[in-house]
Image (spheres, one colour):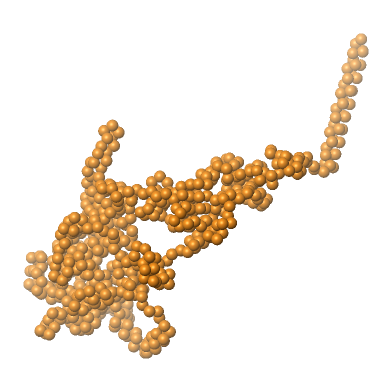
Length: 639
């Protein structure tokens, strides 16, 4: 029996070995057959049209899938945009408004941000991709904006559909925060009071031009003008602080701030304050005559004690009228020990002089240099002057040095201080003048155009080829109740005319403001070839003679046409088209306005535009189509 069991065990082991050998043989044969057979996959029939397709989750071909799918599901086609009727800005988000033109790229981005459903989850397979966006023409008074959108979406693995549809935006009127504050009394939060204790407004006229050029008035609710300054109202403290920082950069000031409690909530510990900042500008003005203390003159480079205020910036720039030496005084030095001018730059304190002769004074500091040319020559000149009111009465003449003497020629009219007969505001200066330490006359500047005429009427304004822009300022109660009148006109008109004369005679001042061409410059006739030929003939003389005349007659302070800006009409009517229709003129031919034609603004920004004629052929929603394989790969890469 034992032998029988042993033999049975051996027989079973041999059978298992044979089975394993057969299994290995069959596996090798299957692998060899699979390698030799072609790669084939089972096809299925489309459940709608019966076409053989590769199996997918929907068992539907791409054509039937496109005819039954709507990839714009979930995308809003009717939306609302809010526009402020006052400032024409568009509402962007909570408390934010932006200014953009119709058919512009900025407005297109704002419209797309209001379409819900375009911003899907990036991890979702149903993400929409915007392929194209175009403006559609709408009636100007319909309060509607239409955008033609083309989007793509992957409906199933490997199948991407593309569809075009129209999105309509209804424009609603809504006031922005700034416009609401303008119509509410006491809506301001921070008030900036700018004051200067002087008898004229020339400093504020210059400050107004600085504000306009840098746009510092943006964000203010309103501006009020008073006899000695201006008030700026702001909706929050941040905008007021930026405006005060701007003032500190352009004029020497000192600031005092206070606040007033309006209301408080004891439970939440929240208080409502109104803040007021008092900004005092240095009372020194351009062309004021100073008599410096000995210590101050020594600290300013040992400059002469008799100086003129050349101009005012964040520093006080001084110049010696007899030698041309310059110095600068900081605001801290001035406020530490205030200096009172001995003669203020008022029209009543100035005298008009006629130049009878001029002789240049050369200062050769470096004898190793060559003879100075017109760029290196000294600006000093010895002038022979006579008071305009003394002509024909006496033969009194003065010979004085002047730092603006290089601008003068015989017959020119200039203004200055007559220190011989003028009453000075300082006892020490009176003593120095009695000892003969002061000149008889100090020349300030040269007069140009109609200002040099004896009759100081409106001729100077008519002859000017330039004009300035003004702020939208309303007069305060104090200003409207105290209009001071003087001989020949009001005080404000005289201050404005004096400021215009300062601008004409100071090139450095004009660099900080924008000057615009006057109407008589814009309407000059076009240049003809005969005029150019005549000018060429007149300039074909001796070159050396022309160069000599340029050296003698060079005036680098006079206003030139290339300094003026054009493209701004300050007195245009509220509706230029209606005014042009009433007068029978065409504004496009006159070149007074620049308006975009239909679709021109969109073409400028590179956007497509559907014109009025093509709107009829556009449906609200097109049928989806299957995109090409190349587009599918790009779509997958973008995801």
